[in-house]
Image (cartoon, rainbow, N blue to C red):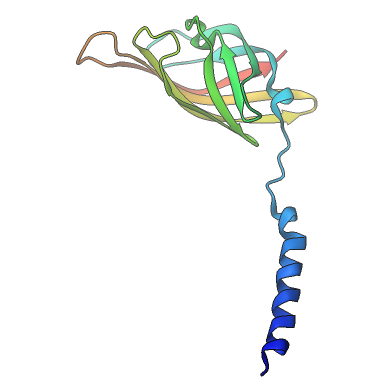
Length: 145
């Protein structure tokens, strides 16, 4: 087979692939504006009493970052989280630089105009060297007001 006969089908396949490549992009139902706002929290953790309180979620420095104020009803500084479509990730951090660390993950859902964030996270008290006290919070529900 000549090089010309091989080249034409290869170019057609490449052009077809490029034309349909954007359609393979992840189709996200949410953007930062969907996350932003005040939420009512209902949480039940392993080392603290069940609690209800409010948080405020705001946009972060990029389209994939959010800030959560009043997290765990204790942190004075906002907890930073990243978003990827319906997934939220809280990387390990010490928001107040006081020896209390937080990390976790969760999802966001919107049904009948109600936005709900469900998170599972751990708060670690590492204020005493060599001793780590953890509060495991599973399935905490945040409902946008």
